[in-house]
Image (cartoon, rainbow, N blue to C red; front, side, top):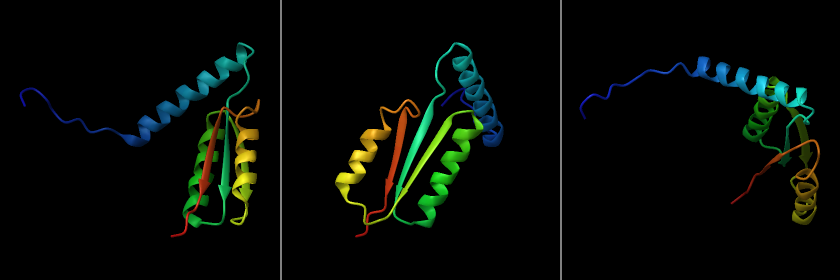
Length: 106
């Protein structure tokens, strides 16, 4: 194992640097006349952990200057309706990515 040493990383500092770089990239895109990227989150049902996850994704997305779109649906939403919403959200001029969370009960 000759020569390799461990290096301790500061996760908070690394995250702050990445967010700053992404924010600058978003501003540069807009300055070039490109649209601001976005993330659409679709949360199906009520689950505390999933709600926290989506809330944190929305917060991080907004912190870097991106659009954040959220759809909260009832757990009884039929799969067909859910897939239609997902298809509508993806090609949207407001979002490049869709995060779909559906709690599965076993």
